Length: 385
Image (cartoon, rainbow, N blue to C red; front, side, top):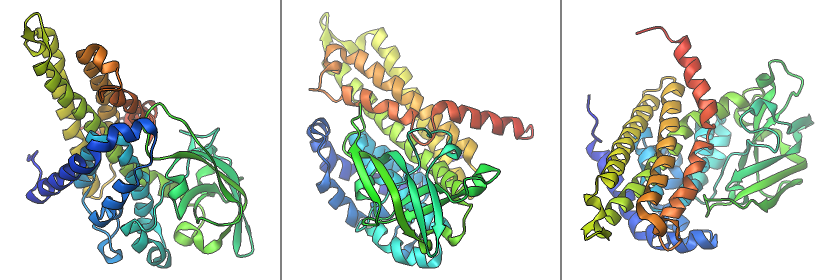
């Protein structure tokens, strides 16, 4: 077994690490505290190809492997997890188009999405439907050559910048089983009946907006049905979310690593009773546990990403990686705050931001309790080795 990155993957990691250290870290604290959208960072990411990470090369993307994909989110999140959110759902929207879109849809949208000229997200969650996606209430009724869409989506990252925005709808609300009546429509900016509500205030994950989306008799052309056939929407979304768990796990590893890095530096510099606090066993135990768990989370994430790269079903691996990495992230952020003491609670340091950002990874791309049931069901169904 080889647990090392390839030469190409290592060089790519170094490229992203240099970018994050040069262009994200210096502005992260002020931008995050003020809620300023990082337009200058977005502009720098465009020529780097980061908006085309999962776009095939024939459409102008860079089509990186899943391990490299997870590394992008780790390195950016070490600097500022919010910036990773700008790439997260965008990349999943491009994945859905690349895997399921018709040739006309791919040619129409993927080249601009690859360069960041267009950006995207995914509109799934509703006020009364989060983990239970089959419980959504947004309905699309076909009338001639258009769908008339009515419903509300919430907590939609990149909503104001998304064009087109994949929206999960029910094209046959009476279908049984329910998933057979669900589809994805590509809703474009300016379509009649498509509007945004307020940006939702959040504990952390600041930078990208999380917005309400309203569809009131929204007219969407039939040719905007992803894949051209009704009834495949839930499968399309679930495949994207399976891949997305690697980006969430990568983000969690990044924030956890940043918590460890800051804690190590502080423990060396901070003195108590005439000695660096790193000399005290109580601090050493915390640092040792953090370092071990962060590395375990990283390797679990790479293992899950490798499973995706193999082309086989990987919901067990990605579920484990996202579950474990996000729990490690929450623990690492809390331990970092304890090591820093009062300074960890101050906005003068970054620790309180890590502490506020960490819980998102336990919620996004499937809550951890839902993932535990996914993992358990797969374990029960698998043949003993």
